[in-house]
Image (tube, rainbow, N blue to C red; front, side):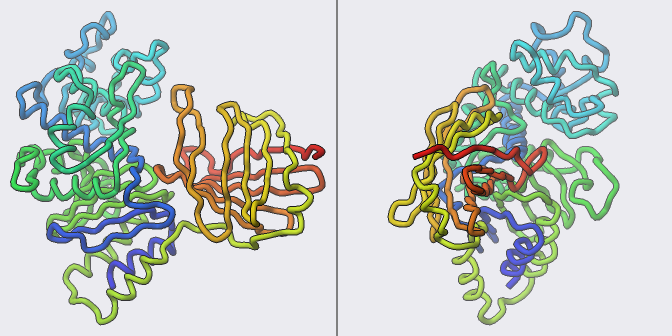
Length: 462
């Protein structure tokens, strides 16, 4: 009943969940997926990656390769400015772990802006306004530097270093991690694994580093990393102000977590012997945690309610990302089917599109700067496929997508695109007025505006 109340509360207040596993006493108490998301797919973790980078640092320390008191810039003498400031010299690995580097604001933009792609040099060239240890600010560039240090002392990227030490023992397969232009795992973001893998990681933390009878991570490191190392706020009602460890957040109710943008969570609740792993695309991450405290915590101590298990099972079976609501067909189809839509110049490089219907099922074929893309958009189910998209380095990458469509009005065909290995869900509304076509677009979550630039085009003659 508590799990059902949690799911309904999140769906009602913010929506956007994609996958969820709740573990209790080392066993799966609940597993839920919002179609078209599914267990086998990896999901982008964003800043939840930081907790894995922290674990790599802990393992390197256990192997005697470094310590938290070593000088951070001392690993990279070749990248130091001619006269390093005293504050830069005073920065230790401990300060990188706790995000108390002394920077006045997140150093990521300055770090990644190095013209030669040397992010280490970019970080070390920035001013350090405060004495390290005296000022906390969320700083993804600090995590990148931890990744760079691990690679420096081990000769392996963080991903490769963790492969035999963490990923393989926990049964985490196919972990992918973005790298900087110099081939260093970006550390503070960029890791993609399955939701189940997040749950395995959380359970290992809960078990103080043990997994299947093997000590995978030293228990002393887990205690240190997940404990409160520094203060990061004073609001007793905020899960972002309960203290910060080594790339882990302290939570209310004695819990701790790693988390990532748009709702990627690994919440460990030692008092309840429980782990909550969630992947999602939510705009209000606090609302999800509030729902967990309001509905899951009390349920751990309550006896099962009669019939609640069956009600939860039925609810889970029907979970789905909201699809367009409308008709399967429109009288407009006959006038537009097979006609090329030529688009005005746009930043996304979409040149043209053609809509066709085969046995009543819509298909959109687009010509873009990255190549041709075809999307099937049936009314009754999700169609799975791939699209070509630009990557962070200006190249192209084939990205998994699921799509559905419906006529939401007689002149508007609306398509929902789920990028099923990420938090992002886009809605495109194709409106036809004579020969003019306007495609209004929005995304569920974004670091900037959620409204995307509209595409404008014109139907050409058959």
